Image (tube, rainbow, N blue to C red):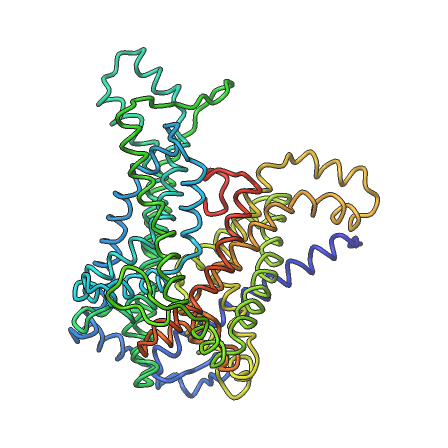
Length: 554
């Protein structure tokens, strides 16, 4: 006879699988059908008599036309350039965070983490304002190098976090053992340090690369006509020419590229697993070279000031009446806020409601595979890993077109056009990796004996879950909620695809003002995004007082 707890577990398992099928598997199938059919073709509307209309001509057209083929090369070129640049720029900061007692470390760390909540759109805003007001690098901004600069600044916080995790993973007793056995510093670095660092470095490279292959807002604003990337070109083909075949085929190629990169990474990591077998405590290494300490401190402070500079410029612009050619605005006004919110009166509430609901649903769903994989073993662990693999391979614009092809039809069109269900679940799908990882990190810090004691001592299983399990998970729940919320508020790719017009968010409205040259009004809305997100991120990390090693982004 099936117990009440088994029935409850079966219900949760069925609910999670139903969600995956409804918002990931079926949309992926619909996405594939659309790329072969040339028009939106949901699996809900597919009929067998349409099979003969499916064709590979859109893929062949892309591969044979330099206009489309070059976008693939440009995407890879730009993403690799940004990844390499951010990797090299982040190395000194990450080294200082791990191996040196640099001054203001906590402040620098907080400023770097705050950069996660500042999207490339706002960085672009700040640079456009500088170029417009002072005439600096005006032409260089709208070029490959302008794109690369903005995307590198946006990627730097992620790269610093993952590199710091890599440095923190080194057990310096291995270095001491190498010295005792007479290995030179060069040989120690090549044989011990580098192999231990490479898996963490590979993770940092993978994450930053994937973040940049699917970015949309920055290329739409800065990419020159002779340098188009896949996400931008697919967006233009879809919304300017309604060319569903080309747009979906381009994005499917991008998805396959991302998946191949992830699979390569997984194969590499599997072959590079190291462990230190010892019963002694971990002893951190500290580099006390004074000259190096000063250099890295100054370097880290300079880069950690980037978010402050962006906030300062956006803030001044949002309150300025006119700012051209002077160091500071000469007149200040609140009219920019009145005008922008007058045109988009629901933007703030739309942003808060959509992101809040997405965060709540995302954390709730993430608890199912995370908790069950921790308690019941590999079955759920494998399912969670597959889900996260799919999520990481899909950029916001890909998620947007997935759900658009699936639900924008005569049967379920109301999900996209009338109510914001589509955009909410688009946020959930795109950010479940954050919430799942946050909960996983929290669970890994809890002894399994507590859960065993719960099952033995608490008569009511549901009461035990509510009184013991949930309180233990609170740190991960809060962190997962905040990360999903913050990253959803700054989403552009999914929002532009799925949000009904009456649910325009701050990011969409700000982007609209920027494209029409109304910088002050757009800056006002961008400043509101900053006011919402920065305090939340700083409060979370200061209150929990966690280091990069414990981060949900690990």
